[in-house]
Image (cartoon, rainbow, N blue to C red; front, side):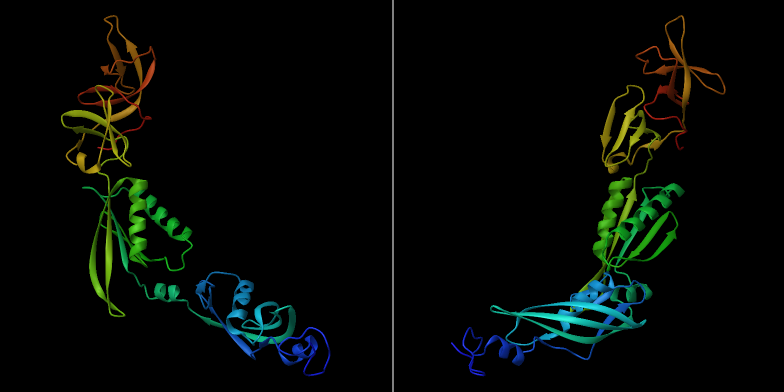
Length: 341
């Protein structure tokens, strides 16, 4: 075979020898400039796939193939570049475009200016406008949240959103309301996920209620309020449940009540212990004495009052953690510390 352009014999490509083919066919049509949007708030860059929190070099590597047109018959064109800053918002790129066609390869060198366009990404625009779709409400079941619970839930939710890695997941605002916290969130899905995680981590129940907000592109848009009610009791509370006196040893995922008289522990769903009532009690490490009568008593560390302790200690321990109530003294399985009344 021979080249129709110069007559040289050998392999041809669309009737041309390699040299004439390369002269006739540039790899790409380089533009004079390219624009790259960058969010001034979070630093994200906008590519064809959307906004992404990537560094500038990765953004440039994505920008070139998306915006520089390859010319036929070249296939599988790849780009490498070296960037030089002209000023804060302008880059000069030296680019190599490598094209492949059958057994041929061609490298085309060119320069292009990249203009960095300061703007706000969709997520940051929504945050600036305090946009929200979902609401997460955290309350206590029949009680107010304690200051420790308020701090713990707030820290937990902020950390979960921060670690999500989703640019569209954000908290518009947090409100301290009577008895609890309200989180205004970017999406309903985020609210539902956080409600489940708060419930699992702090112990509680979850319910949700949608409310029609408007229409978007012909579809109804709902705002969903997810309500988490943290359990009515805390670990260490002493309660009366179905006539028995018990200490709360766990609140998640089930409420575990340990009968103080028998030492038997049973677990319940939070809704099944709503009728339980707290009992004033103290929990402390007490001196254990055995009387000549064989009775075992606990000694109050302040009043030195002696009371029979139940259930009877199995070993001859000299000290033990006890729950001290108006009804008597009981061995505890929890560390010392007063229960909440």
